[in-house]
Length: 230
Image (cartoon, rainbow, N blue to C red; front, side):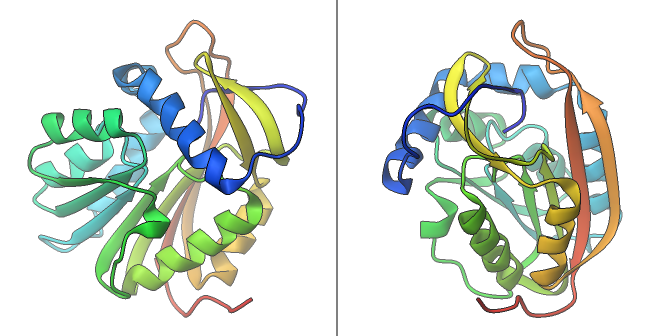
């Protein structure tokens, strides 16, 4: 969830049960505006090209926080891969199903979707961790690694800031943001059983009146081991 403006924390931390509907409401309100704001990200395109160069034909790919389906699910599906997109926003899922009919989309929290271990060739996690706290992000990355086949790929993008439970305005919508600085995110990936094969950092300004330049970090990883317990 890039494109945010950080402000001082306000009030107590929102619990997970309350945070999920708030996050969904924010992206329901944004709808197609999100896609337009980030359509110009060349770093995102480079990341997809990196993944496409490595996938075998008809690979099975999980897109976590699939949004409107563009560019990730559409690019992968158009290349002949089997794509499952999961997003908590009903509006986003409806848009994605209409725009990318060759992929499958589910409206759910990825943590609640029953998926078999070692059942995907690749997992995409583009800016979809930022509304979870650090413990939840850690647990989810480890879970997603378990969903990968040995040698499978995971691509992860975030805004690499040292922030926890910070109130933010994201394209006019109130959200709560947590992230890791770059080195901590790399350490999390490695501790989760991933080898970081490549990384790309950039500054990007979303095409939105409230947007400011922001750092983006893309990690391109391969599953080499089992996530550590704990």
